Structure formats: structure tokens, C-alpha cells
Image 1 (spheres, rainbow, N blue to C red):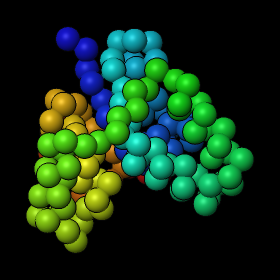
Image 2: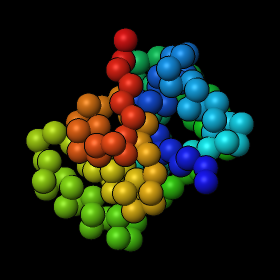
Image 3: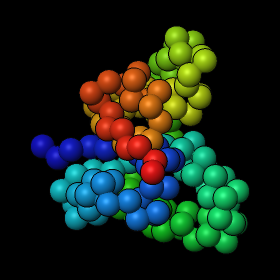
Image 4: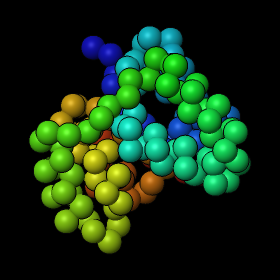
Length: 134
């Protein structure tokens, strides 16, 4: 069975920054050896942060690259909405609502999270791979 990864905004930014450690996971996805997913809310966060730091033109280009890639975009909803709310209630001081949705979807769909957020790693445990931003 193929590995299934769900990617947060920080992990996506690391990939575009050329991080060698995270690249191997993206290579697995782009070569078809693993499945890759991103939540719409995390894609919005990635776009926003890229535009804020690097500029709108770069954000737009990277957004189009992602949209046209093999990464599957997920609109969160259904049972994940309730689960995300419960996660947020339990971790209201450490997790954003977007991170709560990320964890809920990962749990519900049996995916491993690729994240740069230590709080996501702490809550998701071994179902998350943490990458430190250098």
C-alpha cells in the first residue's frame, strides 16, 4: 500500500525553498510511489504567507504549480468539521483552526502529516513527520 501524506503550508514552503530533507517525500509523491494531499485551507495559508513574504506574483505562480500538480486538493467537511472543533477545543492555545482541520482530516483518512509546526507533531504523534525550519 502506498504512503499517504497530507501537507501543511509550512512543509509546502520548505519544499519550494529547496529543503533536501522534505524533497524525498515530494519525490515519492511526484513519482507516484506515494499519494499527496493538501487541504484548501492550508493552500490558502501557503498563498497568503508566500505573498506576504516573497510577493503576490510568486504566490500566484506557486499556487498554479500546486493546482496543476499531482497533489490532490481536499475541501474539508463532514465528520472532520466536528473532529476539528473538538481538537481545537482541546488545544485552543497551541493549534490554529487550520491545523485542527489538518489533524482531523489526517486521522479520518489515515494519512501522515508533513509539518513544520511542532504543535501539530505533538498532537498528531507518530502520524506526523516534523521538519525544522532552518
